[in-house]
Length: 302
Image 1 (cartoon, rainbow, N blue to C red):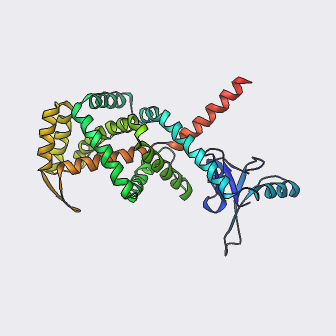
Image 2: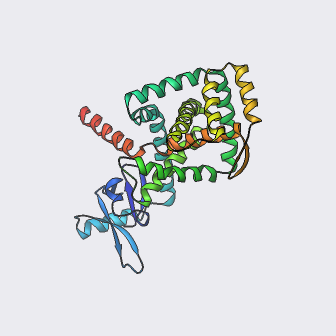
């Protein structure tokens, strides 16, 4: 068969896009009988990709093939759209838990939550979050490739530190697609709380990243100043914050990609961190956890 169904993702999957290990990782089954299947490539010269049942009679397999021939592209599109919507809702509900579990230690978690709480209360950061939200919506509507390029950069870092690295092209593609879906949804009006939560974490991460860089190399003057401005902004009054933003706007920084203001660089770094946080979340592990929880709930109801 040329089409399988991922029990984990809730999506129809074409045989040609998956690799051998993907069938187990993504719980790919026959869309009709729901039995597990495995990847086969017949005739290496032409690379005929298909999915096969493990132990089924020819008659049984023929019935599955007949049933699958009746699945239309419109049915697949609607099913995948519904699954995408359900996935976003699941991850929005689990967002805080995913971030908290991602912390290296309880002390890191305490510091992170404390810093984010200060950021959430800051009036000047509230103003900055509003500007960032409007700017991100405008920029990424005009050029969606900017977000995709940023996601591509973060995938390498994800694989470097993940407990379960993404080994296949299909698994990497799924991670990138979920991150992109999540980013687009967070920019919508009804997800502002999640956007603000993500912004606060990214703000804190951007400061930490500069501090961590100092251990590996000598920082440039503007990097010191950027970190100091960001630390001071969290504690600043609204008027003090406006003054600091004006100063940063007039602070020129020359980098490989041209001359930018320190304010521009700060906003770009925060957005980059936001996309990075979404890209490096363990989506597949949480989908498996959610699937297990649902099975346990169903068993308890019996």
